[in-house]
Length: 403
Ligand SMILES: *Cc1c(COP(=O)(O)O)cnc(C)c1O
Image (tube, rainbow, N blue to C red; front, top):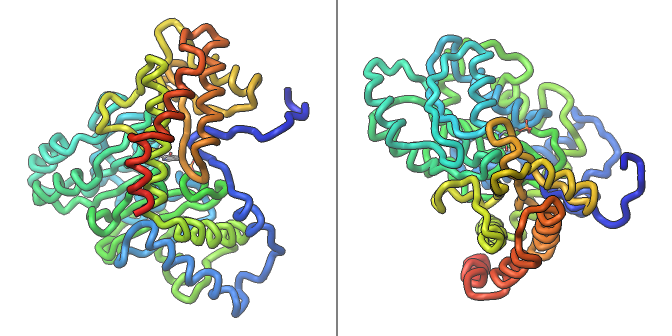
């Protein structure tokens, strides 16, 4: 199909990159300019303060790297830790796995807590390990807030309570790549020390920005951290950012896009953005129920509002559904990664999205499943989502959105 014209819109429903709204595309269509000009800080200084609102922090400090989420992972760890430091990390999906792998490559000793894929961080187990660490050798706890591979959201506030209950000084590191800007995320209230995200998911931008938010506690500790860092040094960024500049050439169009994205998020209202994601996820889950299928997430408490990972029945391959959807219906669905490869497909429902767009994806997924022989009732998922969106259940969530 490569090269062949495909009329109409591509339905992009992978959980990142997400749809970039036309307003943002236009905002990024700018000529290049001198990033050392006296005018430049008038673009950047407000960006840093507006970004803090997305993290819901007053005291944290936000840095924007020309990178992706993975670069932000690296920055968070290398600026605060020393090789052979111990960190504790629950693993329950491909993204928690990759972050652990990155930590190990930097010489950190990761104590991995295996959790069943489809569940998330277990605060009780975290508390237990921290209580046993009387010498306080564990320097940090790394948690993926929203595990994009399995559609599982963990309770970060509960992880903070576990750390405090153990009276342990470990820093709390949170990957919020597929949650921040889509699912409620409270940096200050939850006592997060380092939170990271990327531009191409809830922020509605192309990939290319890695965003790190650091607490005051972290700023004080950075000097003692001996991991090698250069490009991702937070101190270099803080120094240059203080006057509205960057230590190297920033990704200019993305910064203009970011300004527009933030404007759009605050026009809608952050609370409404969260409620919309909850609402859209509810409709998706209604469709999954009606298909008689189950989510990878084992219990409602793990349900993600930004991505649904849908198990295909025994004897079928999720990759076939995805391939069919792409080739026949111009619909991009997310694949099952590593341990769950072939066992599921994912619908990303985050970013710039509404009910009818999502109904298109649900419809395409339904047709593709039938095409590969999965026996779902024609129209069942679409109908369930439609009813959810127009009736009681959905309306309750939407009232929340209007408040
Ligand atoms: C997408 C994603 C990442 C990786 O980010 P890149 O921007 O691809 O480097 C990390 N963590 C989570 C939870 C993600 O969803």
